[in-house]
Image (cartoon, rainbow, N blue to C red; front, side, top):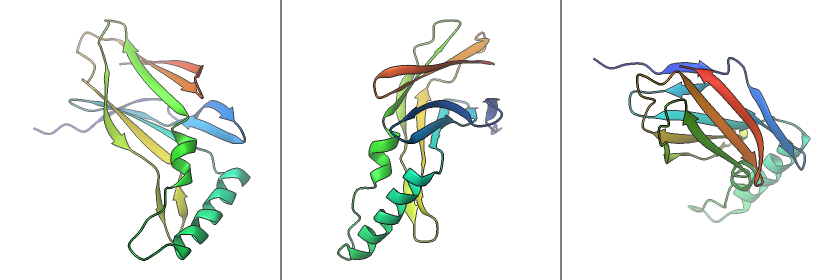
Length: 144
């Protein structure tokens, strides 16, 4: 029988750090049957609006069938994420997705980091560590 993911926290977006005018937040962490999904976003502000507006122009000027590199990629991947738990599980990065864009709302300031395996049944706490531009900025513990 399929299982829906468990949301283990945070309940609301939690600030991880600011860096060069960008504020990074951790969104609710999802525990799936075989993986953990950790989403990091960038709070919409003047810096994000300026990049999004400039990218809209770049897209309009691009050759048909081409998609210029999304500037949010370089911004959002300043944040690196690592997982651990209270029983020593070795979590490995296993994919995810980067920021997107659409003609109506502009850049999608969100990335998902996927880790495997899912926490084992005997784990009681999942620890999410985030670093921004190489310096650790947050260590958050979530009960399983």
